[in-house]
Image 1 (tube, helix red, strand yellow):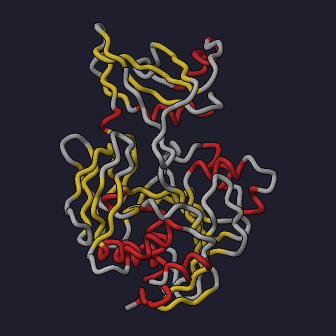
Image 2: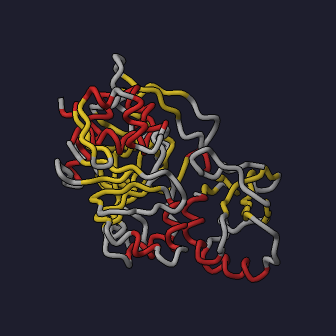
Length: 348
């Protein structure tokens, strides 16, 4: 089998060494999450346990098919032309699906795997063909003096776990590497589609393209339905509202759970947030509150200390439609977040 050998931090490990906890801990600086995942991977079960993201509720345990994880890894390796002798960096926790899948990609592809203790500011000490990060790490690197130089030896950057803010996207586009934003979830064992930062529609919205043997359609809500024969559930119905460009590509609009019906018009908070990102230099989101006149009224929630909003409202009027404009602006000292760093959107 292709996953009976793995080079970890320069040490070539056979199956016996990959089952030796003490040895693994010694060459990985005691990375318990990584060692626990390999222990689960090589047990007799056909699955490993994971958890849903918790974006719209409490994280729920989920069985992840090892075969589906292998098939997903092979497709990603093929997309990035990863093969024996290339290298990838794991700077995410192997407790989560994004981290687990970086390990599986190395296992099935004979790819050299390097580990770095997860942090908001990865060191990126080395030359890597593929690195996976979350938007928070990109944000932190952009605000470091040597952030660009840390990324200088990265060939491909894979960003997932949440929307990539416009400022970070523009910064990455100025650097000599290829950046892709992923679409996927725990249920799809990582991504089923990727969007290059260079591939957008006329308004700057990313175009996501399916991995090999994956296709899409819409349900009657306008939400994405995923067809992938290697997944445990086929078709997989999502709550993501999209615009299909073809059966293998789409533009992401937002979550069905977040759609606001105000005065009989449905507006998408995530689209609105992208329109006004240039006007707010801190975290924010749109949500709704029940309203006697509009059914639901649009509320803009901003993290941090309150400030006068007259100038902001004038800017919003230049970018948002009448129905999208917030009827109220609120401030919260700190947003609640999931364990993986995603903002929990409260509805009032």
